Image 1 (cartoon, helix red, strand yellow):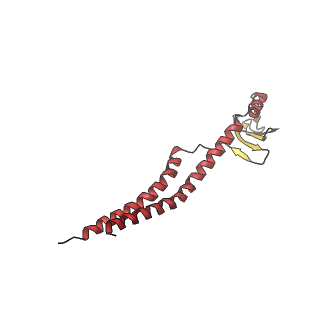
Image 2: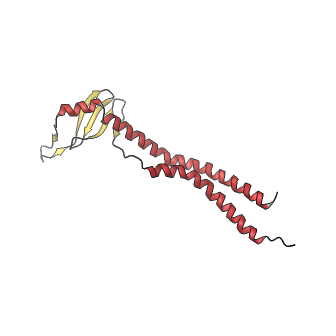
Amino acid sequence: MNLKEGTRRLALLLGVAGAIACGFASYLVLQPALDLRARHNKFEQLANSDVVRQERKNQGGWVSVDPKTGEQIKWDQEVNKGCIKTIHWTAENEVEGIDTVDGQYLYKARVPTSSEYLLGALIPVFGFLIPWGLVRAIAWVGAGFVTNTK
């Protein structure tokens, strides 16, 4: 085996090991984004459900007012229909949160950005390229010191 072939194999081995290690790091980045997406979707599904639409229609613009200041305030509405136990309304009559019958509290979560998903996908790629490139660069520099004199 020669230096060129050994270097190539070492670079591939370390690159694959780096990609595998960074695959776990990628999981740590992607898992919160996927959980956030699921939380957002579940809240939106319940906030736009027939039960909430019906309660919004039934309240007909009714708001809760603070007796001391006269300002509109947040308020809670017991529903106990479907899987919704309580709807938490904002002062502007928007759904702020929902208590479900199984004890979960769902709130409006932000949607993960595409850069969060892109970062999670690129981490294993960098995990491969960085060790692979370093080994190749060190071998290239080292090969410059080895001369074939005849």
